[in-house]
Every structure is written in structure tokens, then in C-alpha cells.
Length: 161
Length: 161
DNA sequence: AGATATAATGTATAAATATGCAGAAAACAA
DNA sequence: TTGTTTTCTGCATATTTATACATTATATCT
Image (cartoon, rainbow over all chains, first blue to last red; front, side, top):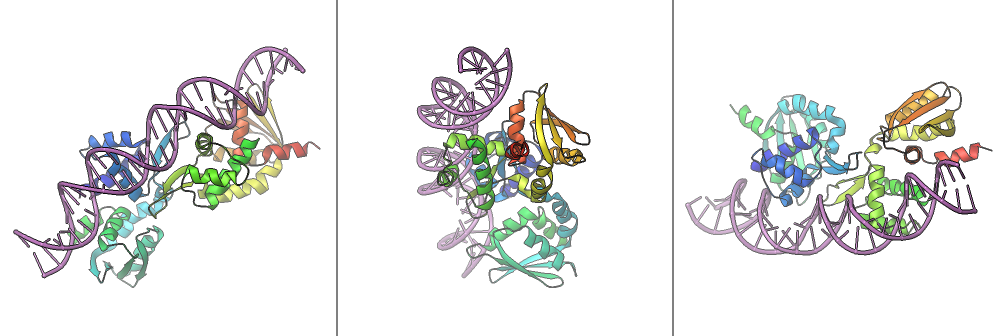
């Protein structure tokens, strides 16, 4: 769970600041009590889909391609996330329960993220079936969902009261 | 002038194929008679603003952020480019002459590319003034213009007959 | 054209980033 | 809990990418 915090922190840092290297990012993470090695950082950046591009001033900076459309991202937080009630697993698949009428919207958002881990989704009225790609565990899909919907699992816990 | 060809070829290759490393790209360029060293490639990729991102399958690929909006790019070719008549230099500035009435459109396109080299533009009816940023030579702006309007200089030569 | 300045390139190397492997931690099952 | 499997991580290192410096090519000026 330290990892989730770290992923979120990395996302935040590279979108809000101009990070020029792993080394710089490592120091920033350390100052937040989320230290790790450069190797782990390399792996985490890959998981987040983060890349590196010229900054236009002779250097380089990290960035998240997803940020092109930060409207969907914002929408995800205020529309998609609050509509999710719970997630259960069955036969290697995941079933997401939503507020009635919201399954289609939610599945649309998940599809549009085009995450490799998810082969496809089917949505009813308040239920979504998520089919993980071959070789992908349900745990990996959970991580994936947490990445595209930060705070999802924590919110679900709260909903259970 | 080999360089311009190479830049265009690189652009084309990384947008049309999934290029995973300099090494792969070098081979492709070589097969097109546009060989260079890895060092030059590194510099060229930076000039083009090309970056590297995870490909979603455990590897990495190069890409051009500009590609988000390839509508403007197409428009540039069929609308902006044909409207340009000539480019002259004066006092470290560049003056672009266009077909009457087209200066505003053209300047708008140039502004929207947000190239670091160009501090700003002023457009009349058939004349645009381009102000290079401090420390940027007119030659560098020419290269910059060729990047955002491929074929520009060749076309101007033709127009002079 | 010849002289001077600017940009482009290659070579060698430095710097940055990715990864195989092994151990640690966490999740899961019974 | 205990054993079993999966994920995560660090270490050391391989791989990849960037860059200082020297050289060549290209453009600029008179």
C-alpha cells in the first residue's frame, strides 16, 4: 500500500512540476517519506504510462500522456468514482456494482483508458463485467483500476458503512 | 539539406510505426539512405520534440506529442503552406510575404505551434513579422519553420519562377 | 571568391534508465 | 497459523541515451 501512495505521488509530481530525471524525482519522493530506489521508480513510471519528452529548453521532462484530456480525468473523479459501490471477483473476472443507471458511463470510462490489462467490459444497468486479458491477475486489474480511478478502493470501504 | 530529409523521415517513422529505440530507428533510416549516428539521432529527436513512452506491452516507443492535433497539421499543408510567397530577413527578424488576406491565418498557425524559437508574430494583410527569441538565429527559425511547415523552402524556390 | 561565422556531425564517453536475479513482503488458501 | 503463490523491491549491472569536444560542412558577409 506504500506503492499506491508512491504511484499517486509520482503522478502528482510529474504533472505539477517539471521533473527532469529519476534522480530528481527520487529526492522529492524521499522528502515525502516515500523513498525507493531508481529501479523501482523506473518500474513505477512504466506502470503509470509516464514518458519523457524534450522540455523545449534543452532539457527533458517527464509527463503523463493521459493529461491531454484532463477533462475526462476530472469527470472520472466527480462522476465515475462516486457511482461505484463495490467490486467482487468471480471466475477470474471482476464485477463492478454501481448506482443504478451508471454502469454504461462507468464502463465507457474504463474502456476509454485503453489499459492493456483489461481485455474488455460489458455493462448492464448497474453492473459491469470486466474481463482481464490472459496472463493478467485480478490483483493486477485492481492495481490498474486504482491507477485510473485513484481512491477507488478506499471509497468502496467507506461505502460499506 | 540531408538533415531536413532526415527530420521528416524520423517524424514519419515514429508516427507510423512503433519504434522502440534509437538503434531500430537508425537501421530504418539507413535503409532509406539517410544514415547518421546515434548521437545525431538523439539531437534530432530532441529538435522534433519526440519523446519516449511505455507501449503498454512491457516495452517503450517513441512518439510526437504534436500528433494530438493532426488536423491543424493537415490544414497547414493544404491551406497555410500554399499561401506563403517568400521569406526575407531584416535586423535579425523574419518577414513572411503571403497571398493577400492570408497573413493572419498563417501567423495564427505559427503561434499555435508554440515553438520555443519564436518569441512572437505580428500579422498585417499579406505580411508577417516573426520575432525570434533572444539567442535564436534566423537560421534556427528557418529550421523551425521547415519543421512546422515541411516543404516550405522548396516551395518558395518554385514560387520564384 | 575568400574569410569568417554558424550549424551539423562523428567519436568517444558520460550520464541516465532498464532489467535479471534473489530475497522480502504481501496476499491467499486451507 | 502455516504453507503456497504472487507481487514488490533492492542490488548490481547491462542497455540505452545524451553530451563534450574536435572536425567538417554549410551559410554569411565583404
